[in-house]
Length: 207
Image 1: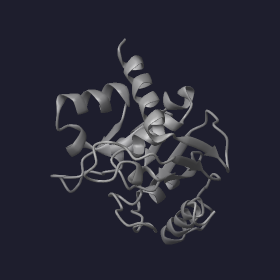
Image 2: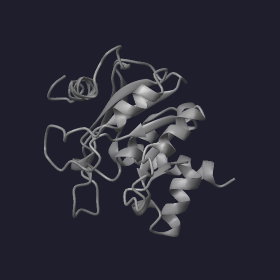
Image 3: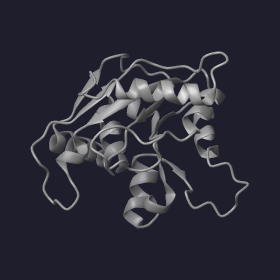
Image 4: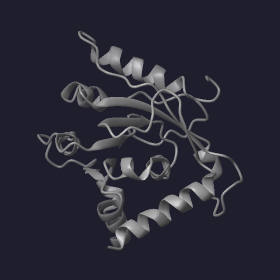
C-alpha cells in the first residue's frame, strides 16, 4: 500500500524541516493507551507530534482534527483518513443532540490512543494557554485506564510563522510529561486546571 510510504515521507520531512527532538521527560514511549494533549499554535502541531512518536506508537495513535478543514479537498481527505487515520470532529454541528466527543470515545473503545488540543483552537499568543475545553475531562472520566500525557510543542509557530513560505532555522521540541489520571472526587475544574499546570510546566520558560 502507498500509505506507509506517504507516512514515512511526511514524518521524515517534518523532522528534517523542524529539527524536531522528542524529550520523554515524564514517561517513556510505551505501547499503552494514551490521550496525548498539547498546546496548539500551528496547523502543523499534530503532524509534528505524530511524527515524534516511534512507528509502533504512531500506528495506534490517532490525531483528532476538525472535519471542516480536513474534508475540504481530496488531498486533505486522503491524508487524514488514509495516512493519519484521524478522528474527525464536526465543529459545525447541525444537530445539537449529537455528542461531539462520540468519535473520540469510539476510538478509545477500539483501543486507540488520541492526540488532542484542549484549547480547541490555535493560540496565537506568545505565551500561556487558552482556557481548556471540557472534552479532556470527559475523556479521562470515560476511560480512566488511558494515560493522559501532557506534551509541550516548542517553537513550531516560529519555524513557520504566518506569511512565510520557507522555514526558519529553529529547533523544535516535543516534551512528554508525566501521566495524569482523574483522581477520586476530582471535579472538572480541578482536573482541567491540574492538566493545564502540568502542560505549562513543560514549556521551556517554565522548565
